[in-house]
Image (tube, rainbow, N blue to C red; front, top):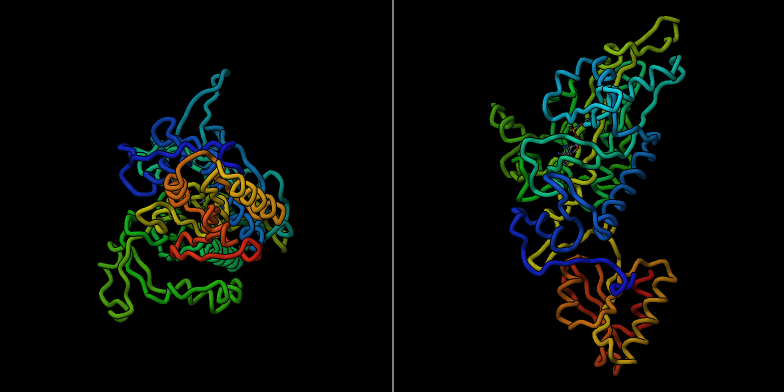
Length: 436
Ligand code: P5A
C-alpha cells in the first residue's frame, strides 16, 4: 500500500480523552475513532489488525475442531425468557422494540440462541459432541465504558459453545478450548495466564479467565512463574484429557482477592510472580443449565432423552487489539508482534524528489509485493523525520529506508522496530532477508 493513497490520519499530540497508553496510541496511529461512548469506527489500519487477530483465533478454533457459523446480533426477548435471563440480565442489555412492537435486544452473548439452534436441529447422541463458534459484534451497555476498545459497549467477541453427552465429554471439550486459547495467545506473541475464576452470571462450576500481562491491567494476579514457560511446543502434546492439560489447568494463578484468602500458598516465594493482567478470554463449563431450562434434549444411546452438557468460551477480539498494545509498546509507539502487524514491512523513501531514490524504492516495493510481503510504502512528499516518527508510531516490525547516501554505496538501511537495530544491506540482500 502506498501511503500517498492510503487513509492514515495520525495525530502528533496525545488526545486528552485517552487515559491509558493503548487508547492514546490507537487514536494517534489512526486505528480508531470514537463514534459515541464505547462505540468506535475501525479505520483502515485498525481494521487490518483486528482482521489479523480474527484470523489467528479462527485458525486455532478450527484446529481444535470447532465449527464456524454466524448468529445474528439481534435476538428476541422471548428467547431470553426461556432461560430466565431476560429479567436477570439488567441494564447492561440493550432492549428495544420493532415496528410490530415485539421486544428485541442487541445480543450481549449467545448461549440461548445456540441452545435453541441445537434443540431444533439435533436429534440424537450421534449429533454429539459438537463445538460451534462465531465471531460477532456484541453490545453491553457498560456503566463505565473506558480505555477505548478495552471496555467498549459495542465490541467484537469470538464465542464458542460446546454440546456433549456427559460430563466426561464436556471436560474434553473444555480442555480442547483451554489449549486452543493458550495456543492463540502464544501465536499473538503474548504470555497468557489461565486464572481459575468464579463463574458469575454465565453460571456453572469450572471456569478460567485468560489474562495477558501488562502494567496497566485492571486486575492484580499472583501466579507460578511456570506459566511463563508454556510454549507452542509443549502445547502440541496437550491433547484433551492428557496429563499436560491437567498440569496446565492446575498451575497456581489467582486474582489478588482470591490469593489473599489462601492460607498456604503452594508456590515458593521465589517462584511466585505478582503482575497486573488484562482479561482477554473467559471459558465456562456449566453443564445442562441452558439445555434443561430450554427443553433441549437428544435421544441417548439407550433411548432415553438427555440434556446435553454445555460450556461457553469467549475471546475479546477487539479488546485484544488494545491489550497487545498495552503489553508491547515503547515511548515512540506501538511494537506489533509479527503475526498481528498490519504490514510486515514499512518502506521509507527519504527523498521523493530524487529520481534514483524513487526508482529504487518503487522497484523494492514492486518486488516485495510480488513476493507476497505486505508493505506500507511511505512515498509521500514529507520530511524524513516525520516518516520515521510515523513508522515507529504505527509499529511496523521491519523498516527499510532508501536514501541518496546509501544508494551511492549501493545499500539500504533495514531497521528492527523492536530492538532498534539498524543494518546496511545491498538491495538484493535486503530483498532476500525480507522475503525469507
Ligand atoms: C463466554 C462466551 C461470555 O460472555 N458467553 C459466550 C461467555 N464471557 S465474558 O467473560 O463475559 O466475555 C468474554 C470476553 O469478552 C471480552 N469482553 C469485552 N471486550 C470489550 N469490551 C467489553 N465491554 C467486554 N466485555 C467482555 C473479554 O475479553 C471477555 O473475556
